[in-house]
Image (cartoon, rainbow, N blue to C red; front, side, top):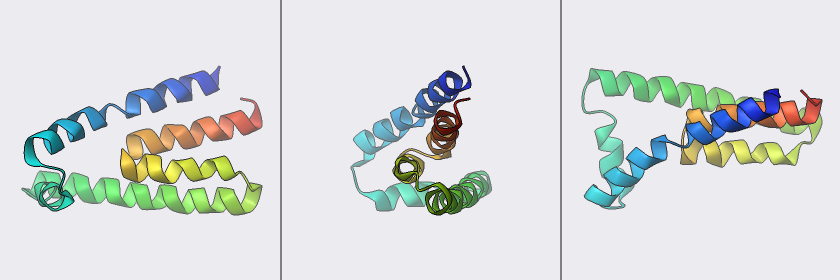
Length: 103
């Protein structure tokens, strides 16, 4: 049951890409202006750092899981985290652990 919840949360965590896609569609597919938008004011700078730190922690955890359990599926967490965000990477990681543990 927990696996289903984590997978649903992963799917919900893909939602930010709707906004990213719209932004890229309006402003072009160059990453530079998107990065500039992350630092438009103190609020966006704070959330950018918050999510960057969380993403780095998630990648460290991914590496630990790979080394400890040789669960190569866990590598999917990295592109989910940096391609969409922590909102997708974290529930995917929890889903993969729940799958492994049978939770």
